[in-house]
Figure 1 (tube, rainbow, N blue to C red):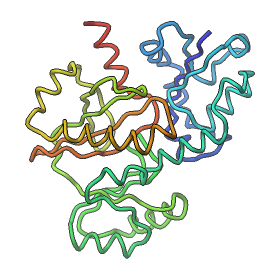
Figure 2: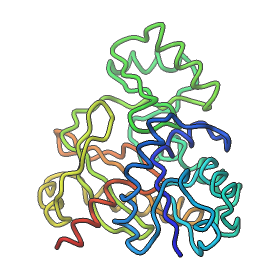
Figure 3: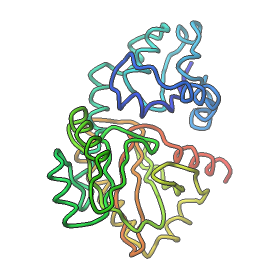
Figure 4: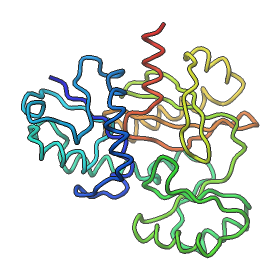
Length: 280
């Protein structure tokens, strides 16, 4: 029996990095209510939140997949009786978490910086007025601060605390973004996804087939960016991690395409891509 765990609280758990972290009730309720999302990707699996795994399911599972692997989901599955041999090791979980640190993708990001002090951030503000500061471990629109011209007292305090707990802050220039795309891997490339965001928060996918996306953005640097990303993944990621991965891209007004972040987990873009494949 394949056991498929929907844990949308994964990004929060990854940011905390502790096996005994308790996610917010709203995140747990979302996982329980919408666990059927995993059925799209694993139609033959038993799908549920980690908190709803029964003793029988734990004992009869022969394979376990998760929306994203972190210390919390591993601990909860082991506590419920799932064979530890079916789960990533603690070292493997730590390796995934390290890859998820936003500094990992800096080699693919033009003009982005790992900032470790207020002085460094202020120097960047002298060069460019508008920036986004990002916590290295965060997701779902959390851990972002939009900076305009100068750091506020709250910005300074946030920067210092984030550096103390997550080693740095990623400073990314504000860009004239006109569309959000992603490259989806499982771990081989399965296609593109096209989605909407608001203030850094995922809203919904736009259901377009791959050829429609390629045609719509043929006058951009999409294909060049894709080739660059795939080469970098082959050299730096696939030797260390073989699993679901989504690379979020920003398409700008001038036709340039920039890497926004990498998610080392399943994504809603993968779900949308599979829904389109089945429909067609």
